[in-house]
Length: 307
Image (cartoon, rainbow, N blue to C red; front, side, top):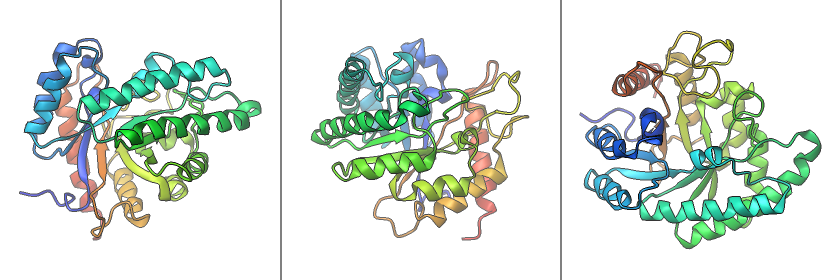
């Protein structure tokens, strides 16, 4: 039976968050991707970098056999390798550009249809204007390279002072950067994540309205920001409804309403956009149970909409 949301969006999952063990053990990639591929509710899978080149064609073949669209998330590369695309140091930016171009090539090898990453650390108010200038130049060069591969690029909006402490940043600021870059690169857009909105002290309405014309990809998840002693404090994307968390059925329903209000979700769109879960099991929790819980949360939230 077709899910009621399937005519509005393609449901996806951030594979490397749902199965965090793949970061340390790539032998777990194929079986966990196969588990998602076997779930017909999911139409999109978001993959991280794959160090073993022999695995890449196998992953591509598995996704293609399941009619599962892959996208590529370079966020673990930026964070894990401490890249800073908005650094005021030209050598540091150059290192980040070389590495992310390599990641674009890998995304092509995996058959990915989109490429996502995030900005570097926030340099502080005094240096933000200069950092914005060099970052926009960086984005244009990366997007030009990706365009040669027919690869869309999205910049994910993160928190500025809680966990990742990224340069981008508030959604209005992200939209300003996107507006400047889009003057030269039509393959660039923004990724918005429900779990990052509370960490920016914004409302769903404020975030989505500010970024509306540039949003090309959305994530939905949860966060904990009120209790620093909580095991899921920060940007760990715990399951929906966790005690002390910010997002559950009502918040997801509000998110969906505003995605309709800004036109991201609409029946008349030429191509159905992506709406992905980004949820991560805590130690002792089951990945499959957390993903099933996310789908139950979506069903309950969807039932609150008046379409």
